Length: 113
Length: 110
Image (cartoon, rainbow over all chains, first blue to last red; front, side, top):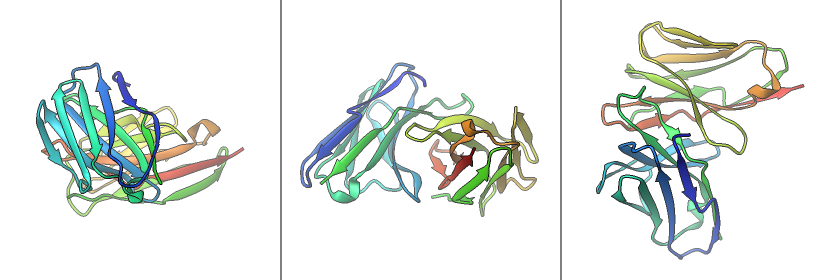
């Protein structure tokens, strides 16, 4: 959907290590989002970006940082991974005015041991 | 942030039976979207509702937006095994943030 790729698709890491997840889009969508999905919680917004170098926090931003240096790339960094950050991470994009919908990437499964 | 409650959390149906999932909000919504996520997959947009009392159909799926714009439902008639997955409602605010319901996981028993 909307040419969104995520890398890596799977990752196993140890507590305390830094982790960076990448989202890349080819549709020139202005907004990009990072969500985490956990059983019983649905999709929860971590951070989002409304333009290059313009980012803001979502409802579960603690322990995460983001950067957007180019329209097509949105990076999510876990500075020091914890076991509570084991989750499936989805990137999404959106262009306001285009049905107000979101297009999701395939997801990244992260396991923090 | 805004919250939307979704029920039920799980639903098992025999193939051919109907299925309904509901989303409820304590505040008036400007719009609501519905997404489907197949097992192991990512959420895929199904539809958006904007108008009070709006009803939209996609083949066997019927989407409704309440008159007060505080609730919405997705109804599937005569479920098939291809309907298996988790259905989410979502709303967006003026800041273009999206809030998702917790989802309803549908299992269809052949």
